[in-house]
Length: 321
Image (tube, rainbow, N blue to C red; front, side):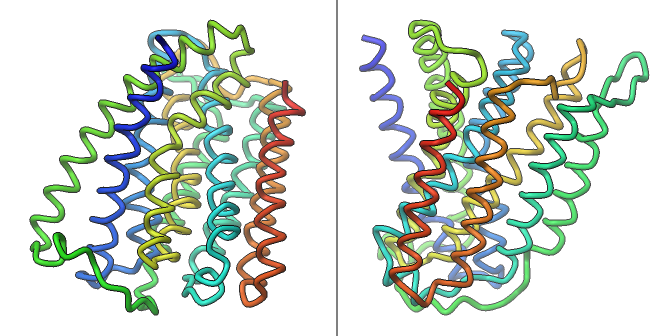
């Protein structure tokens, strides 16, 4: 019965994510905001809300900081496989797509933050004010995220001439935003329910906290990114799809920082071998993603790199179990 519940809730998450991606695509075409900003900030923040909520639940209800690490790191590396899959399935669209220069900057920030997480886990330095115990890593992550947001709206126009869905094109910007907000709220509700089910699955299969979070919570909370990104590519907006994935990843890191602030019993960056392995593979996957920005004109090379991204995700799981 628990598997049926998982599939039903996942179906609702996918359904809502499809509509969210359509509204984002419409905003991309109806406003002056760049696709990189809309996909990398607006959609990324919304599709990362499940990670945010589940992480706070892991801290307040379960007292499991390692579950937060598994959720965030697992979601991030799974998100990168979305890019790899999109490249493999739509190589021609990837080759002919416009990709904002800001994606490179966000990817570089992602690698830097991965290393900061490693240092935070190794040295475990923090500011202790009695009522507040925050890692230096958390502070640096929030600063880097703010810098990335400030630079992400590059105002460069997208080379995208595909049309918007006829049912959406006639809506005003205010109507699109209203529907976007409603779908976002529903997405959060169903994502929370989905997380409760995946937590039961983790307990039933008796996996470690970190790897269980990386597999079940990581995949479950990444369903919005998965669905919305594929639908954006289908609509011809590879730029917003790319921005959604890497934007969600860098936003997910702020979840660690916020969780660290609320976790009063210590430093959330606790040393953990499974987290270490996932981070290393996350860095490798991000480097491969950066490589695709320079090889997109070669379909065969891009498809090979897309395959390597997927292999990296599988390796991260196998080496962490």
